[in-house]
Length: 163
Image (cartoon, one colour):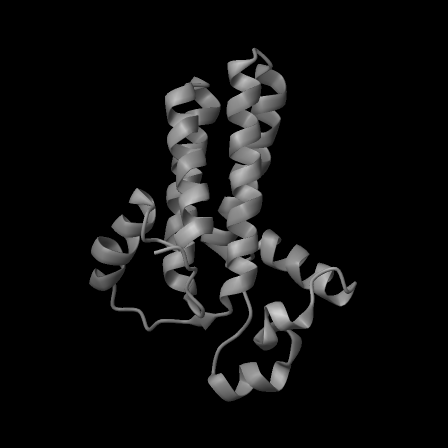
């Protein structure tokens, strides 16, 4: 139950990011703690289990994605999980800031989240994945965490890319 998929279908990841953009915009405009709670829960659920415990993840993988006539594009799972973790931190912090009456700081976090989710959804650019790669290059994340990320020949052989 508590495992993250590896590899990940980038098409599904981009669709989830699109859902995050929509929910993030609603949260940004309304500052509704219920919307923020749902958004934060979704990120935490996806970190823990990929789409299994996430309502948005399940909607995308079980309803939306199967209906799209687009071939899967497989990317490494660990960078995507890291990105979900960053989203969990941002949304949980925004929720706590909202609940403690710090709307400007919460709004700033949500705005950054919406920008990053938009980059993922529209342009297939994952900021969390980019930071993950930089942390690997700096030696802060061991290569063993993502062998496909560390060895480009493994990616070429599998026909997938690192997201």
